[in-house]
Image 1 (cartoon, rainbow, N blue to C red):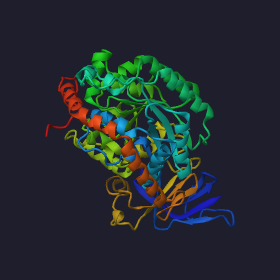
Image 2 (image 1 turned 120 degrees about the vertical axis):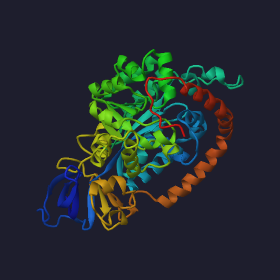
Image 3 (image 1 turned 135 degrees about the vertical axis):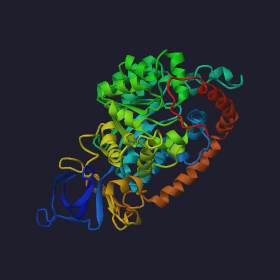
Image 4 (image 1 turned 30 degrees about the vertical axis):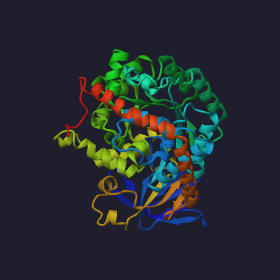
Amino acid sequence: MTIIRGGRLLDIAKRTAEPADIRIEGDTIGEIGPPGLAAPAGAPAIDARGKILIPGLVNAHMHGHGNLGKGAGDRWTLELLLNAAPWLGGNRNLEDKYLSALVGAVEMVRKGCTACYDLAFEFPAPTVEGLDAIGRAYADVGMRAVVAPMMADRVFYDAIPGLREALPADVARVAMQPWQASLETTRQAFKSWKHDRDQVRLAVAPTIPLHCSDPFIEGFRDLAREHGSGFHMHLAESKIQAVSALTVYGKTLTAHLDALEVLGPNFTAAHAIWMDDDDLKRLGDAGASVAHNPGSNMRLGSGLARARAMLERGVNVGVGTDGVNCSDNLNMFEAMRLASFVSKVQGPDYTRWLTTGEVLTMATAGSARALGMGDRIGRIAPGGKADIVFLDSTHINYIPLNDIVNQLVHTEDGGGVESVMIGGRMVVDHGRLTTVDVAKLAEQVAATVERLGKANAQARALAERLEPIVGAFCRGLAARPYPIDRYGPTP
């Protein structure tokens, strides 16, 4: 048993942080009470004087494999990022996959994020050993994660109607692994999973509907139901996808997944930008979640998602950073700030803008629900897991302290994070990561990136040759009329 004394506990609804003590029993919050809360004699105490205590932030959507591609691209659309994927993620061994996930986990916990939904990609196909290595990285840092292998049975160039025909004749056609093999690999991963499922668990993530055949999607739908796992897909992220769906399916992407009986409480749609009211109603009626990724939505020029409309239709909304190769960092404080701001540039009716309280709730309880952990994380309450972030109230971000909720969303940038507790264990203690040698990690990653750069040079050269062709083709698709418009004004 441990007791936290002297801290000020955040109350989002009241927009306050009042003094409170917290008794922790094992990895769980046992009781919260006024200063001086009773505890057994000799119980270890954590001095939280001068600290603001908030729930650990929860990243509803990111990609652990992207961490080695930090800063790799500039003017990339989603489709140009997909064009670059083979060289960004190719030729990795198990240690590379472990290190990539480890880098992201270290960044997240140091910035107050205690859990994430990792759509992990192994090129060209998932492996049991690779998924285990990714899970081990989160376990070694001490972070919670849902690891979902991101898979497809169509390559990007064959997923967009007409794109293959636009490529030079000498570009080799690459066949993806049959979907049955990916399904069996994931099934074996569920059976052999070694990690504590309360900390690191598996889910499934067929990447994008257009990249996956219907039998592929249905097979993973059934596997997710069999294991009671989450099902996470990128959905209506770009106008290219939305326009292509009408050609391929004769309906929207969301309507197509609804027809395949995929939507439900375990389903999370990443991005959900190019959705009409009917699409959002389908998600809300199904009890589904959306991982709102405002940073990458703007970084890739994909558009502005309608978070207010989602909430109005009963959709659970979480906040994500997306991968660092399309958003540049895994800072959930920045993601919250952007979520707030992007709601404010979609019209002059300020009553429809997200409040900072709504954004903070989305990034904690909303994201926790998307991970399937809503009953245990995303809040500081008796019976919940002791995932607590200690913020330094003397940090410049809180001088002066006028409104704690506004300042957590609009002012905090991760600099005020002093300590981070996950499951009652101090993973970051007064600014020091207790579980990983970061200096050693930096050396390992530098050597890894240098080696992979050489190994993937040919794939990179091909992607750079194809970039103007893919870009021009997709610009043409994006110019086609569509019933809704989620872009900002033309620059």
